[in-house]
Structure formats: structure tokens, C-alpha cells
Amino acid sequence: MIVDESFGTTGQGYHLTRIHHLGEHTVRVHIRYDIYAQQSHATAEVLSTGLTWTALVIDPPSNWHDATPSPYTRPAPTARALYPLAEQLGRRAATVLRTPPPATRVRHNRAAPPTPPPERQDTHVVIRIHQLLNDLDRPAGTDTGDRAAAGARAGVDAAHSHVGADPARRPS
Image 1 (cartoon, one colour):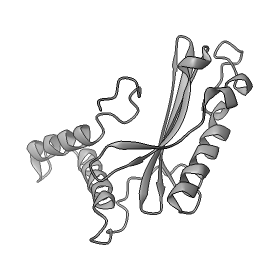
Image 2 (cartoon, rainbow, N blue to C red; image 1 turned 120 degrees about the horizontal axis):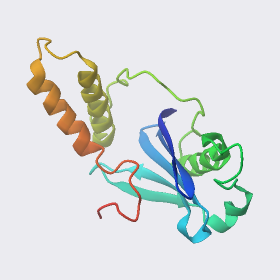
Image 3 (cartoon, rainbow, N blue to C red; image 1 turned 60 degrees about the horizontal axis):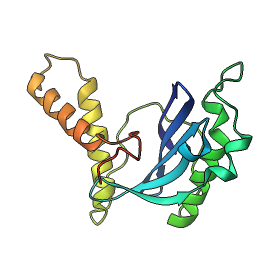
């Protein structure tokens, strides 16, 4: 299930990032199209228990770059231009993880997923992130106070500090 998606453009390209829940795993699919193939990439990564992303599958630009619309075409490409590649990477990641392939529908609510089994610490972290996001949605001045919301925001920022970041700039 896709739980988050973002799309953006740059001066000479565009990028798509999707976060999937595949069984008990959290997978990030990130595709960056640049007019220069050597500056483009397509990867699927799994979130580890240490909240770091580990590459599962990589599709070299030579397999998809020429078939992808240039950012200079009119009308300008949208996220849909990268959906087929994103879905292919999601299916490949599911195969590697031995889970069912991802649903292609984006989930827009922030309801917390079910409680994980105690042996799955990484799933517990994802649930805690959902709880922190829900805390951020609570209006200021409620009985939890602004300090609790600030603490939740700090926890989410720390957990997501490199989500969607350029892999070349991501800390090791």
C-alpha cells in the first residue's frame, strides 16, 4: 500500500518518491529523471530497524531514460510519467522481500496501522511515526500542550530527516 508520495521538478529534471508498506516492511521508491542519464537513478530501498534506508533494487537509467519524457516537453511531465517505473520497482522490491506486490492506490489518511508483533521492532517504529504525525495534527492548546507537539515534531523530523533526500547527499 502506498502511504506517501511526493513529486517535484528541478531546472532540468523531475523526481518521484513513494513510501510503501509491503507486508511488515517499509519501502521507499525514489526515481530521479535528469536530462543527463548519468545523473538519473531509480531505486527501491527498505527501512531498517536503525531507521536507515538499504537499497533492494536499482534500475539503471540505460533501461528507462530514453523512454521517459524530457522535462522540456509540453505539456510538462507529471508524476504519472514515472508511475510505470515506480510500480515496476515496487513489484521487484516485493519479490526480494517475499511479500505481496504493492497496491498502487495512495492512502491519504493518517490512521495508525495495527499494533505490530513484539518481535518486529522496525514496524513498531513506523507505527510510532504515525502516532507522532497524528499528534502534529492536534490543534495547539489542547490538553497535551505545545511542548508535546514540539517533541512529536522533533521525533518525526529526526525519523524522516533523510526521506526524499538526494542519495548523493544522504549521510552514510
